[in-house]
Length: 364
Image (cartoon, rainbow, N blue to C red; front, top):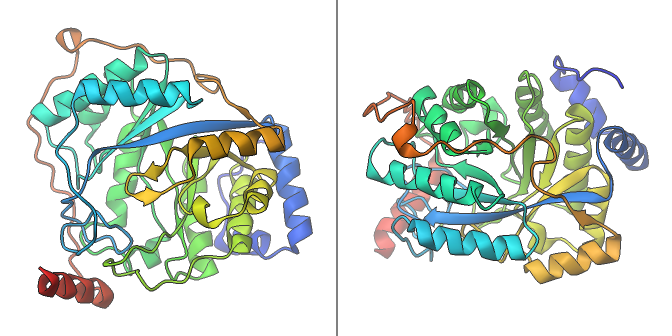
């Protein structure tokens, strides 16, 4: 088995992406079978533990406070509420719970302590635990690791160049720094992006360059199709085609052979045949449940019916990496430092983001 390549160029990736489709599918499926069981798919449940009110201006996100959407915000869930949701997810076939909070970055204090208890609680249920909480410091990453966190999600979203066309309130380098902080622990990295935001193929390739040149490469890479939400700056974007999704999944599989490629947002717009092509091309992870934070997702029963039809099996937890130990708060080596990191705020102007912000002011 050949060593993983970490020096992909943008042109090399573009050339893979643009291969004749049947050749691309064959190459991706062959690579997939060298590194993974082609009939096993990892199933995660994504849970929004704190919804809405985010101060960022991400052009795709209905949780941004500055846009007028139909999202109902809620305060941080309780540990018991999260445990109940985790047990429900486990009974439905999920091996991982991913908890998302609409925060710019983690702030030390009671709410973060509560999230740490959620991590401990779910890990004790023998489920993998993932969090996506925004930017985190090295100490915060170590506290999450002690609690038993299995993975941390922090998407790059797009290429560094196109990122500036989507988000103005944080810098691309902050994403990379957060991933680097996670890498200083035993927590695995989940990082991917979104296609269909108006980016070019060169930008899709640029995102894969950024991810694939990380060493080690992310253990999980979500590939999302934009779900255009009314009130957001990207509300008028046309849905990305299934062919683009298949090509992106296949290219990701070839460029990052050992990574679990997650077929994420946008599956409600895909037929079973389209999803089957993505699985053939190397996708081996999905989100289950009726919502992905705030956007629609296929019902878990529909997914299990699709698995049965395709002969797919849900992956058991802790197959790729051993279950982390949970250290109780009272025994923790790392303490609340009251950190106030200076994450960047580029604050350049994105015209469509400003337009959506002004429309929101008028609506309110």
